[in-house]
Structure formats: C-alpha cells, structure tokens
Image (cartoon, rainbow, N blue to C red; front, side, top):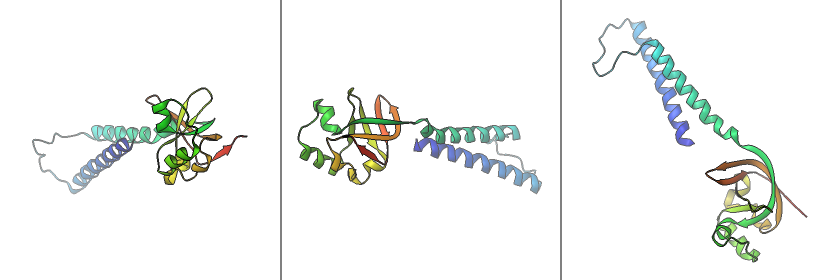
Length: 161
C-alpha cells in the first residue's frame, strides 16, 4: 500500500515537473533542440501522464475505504498458539504474558473464524487487551479480508456477559 502511494506521488510530481519545464521553455522562447535520447512529448502526452498519476494516487488512497465496518463477537486469544494447536489455551496467565510481549491477539468467533486485531486496541503491545484475554468481547471496527486472513481494526471493545 505504501509503495503504491510513493509511486503515485512520484508520478504526480514528475508529471508536474515536466509540465512546468515545458511551460518555462515556452515562456523563455527556447529554440534549443532536444537531445536525441529524450523524445518530444506533446502537451497531450503530458496531460495523459498527469492524469494516470492522479488516477493511481486516488485509487491508492481509496484502497483503505474498501474496509467494511462490522461488529464481531468472540473470545480474545493468543493468535500464534491457536493457529499452531487449533485449540484455545485454558491458562489465562500464559495468554496474558504472550499479549504483553506483543504477540498477535485475535478474536475467535463461535463459528471458528479468527480475526487478527489491529488499530488502537493492539497498540503498545496490546496494552488495552491484556486484561480481557480469554474473555468474550464484542468489537466494532473496520473488517478486512486479505489473502484469506480476516482482520479488524478497532479502538474499543465491549465485554459480553
């Protein structure tokens, strides 16, 4: 994602620089022939390049907009242990220690889906999640699916009784 934004920014800056240089040459009345390795680009080509760069930038910025807001209810688990053993550990102390060390925390739903937690909840080595490990909670946030992995980015959770 970041690479796309950098590329789009460079394309937009490059297209703007080409247009500015052409404008400067036109105003200065430069009649100097162009170098053989730089073919003449018509104003239409400059506009096309600028348009493509702008389109790439807008699309790259809009990718995060495809996240769907949703509410997910489940048990907070140590993601690594669950994915290795395919069972929820019964020792809350171990789960809390793993979360405090910064290991990924996930939300396991009743139907077996695992949502990787990101956003403010997972900040500072899961500081806001450690007290709720192995508890059932409800989280509302931006739900995304990428390469078969579900994730939810949220800043708050609600304990479920």
